[in-house]
Image (cartoon, rainbow, N blue to C red; front, side):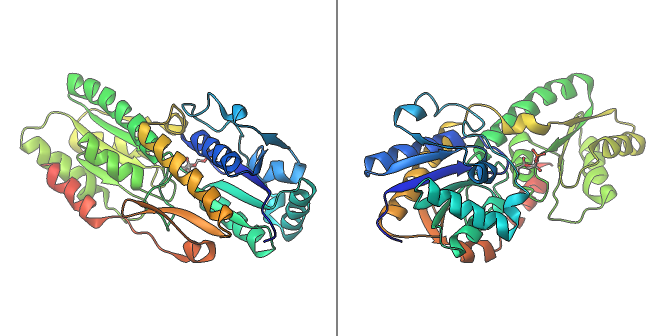
Length: 323
Ligand code: F6P
């Protein structure tokens, strides 16, 4: 990379609470280190369209507490082609962008790697409520999403208790059960079903409910990850098998919105500043990560080849505590 003068920043994939705090950190750290920072709207699609303008310290004011992404986000089929990647690099050149900070999930990282390989230096920051990026123990938005779900669970428990019912709650996570597993523990669920694990409805859901009833329980919570799906059908099956009145709730996109928690704001701020420092120090094509309580970074290609597994001890813990 030649002398770094201008960096671009974009958010891509599903929005996540805390993305704004990350953009703010990139912009302000960039300006602090004497760089010009260009904001790219609507992810890679905006890059292809040249929907780009310079950001100032003031243009990211009053943003740290807001959910969603002020830069907006989009999915771009054109960018997924080689011609699209070449065009994106050419347009970055037109705007004088020497390096790009991408805030997003797994798919956004793959797009960034394509840009990096073709000569536009990139740094990725993990932003997704799913916490499923393999090279990091934390992704921006996860804590806020879990707290949103927890608030819903507490409300659902009130009515489930009042009517002595079972509630089946479907939470986000098409391929990842991190939200589901954590809120099952924090919400006191009798059972949790994750996309990473095969399940048998009679053994994994009906059995703990009946055993709980035999021990005197009067209301029940079953958490289903979106990737497993079928919350309504599962609720009907529970009611048929146990004769316990059962209701299904699918939380959906409510989990993606809302003001970020303190944890997400702090993590976003630390990761955003780290991304800029990496570029300032001449490091390129890196993935910002959180490992063992430290902000660190990995080579982007290596990061994308890593594996992340669901914590078996947490699954076991939920079974133990459902007693
Ligand atoms: O990746 C974040 C996420 O919210 C997943 O949990 C969910 O499966 C997906 O995005 C939904 O995507 P969309 O908003 O495009 O329907």
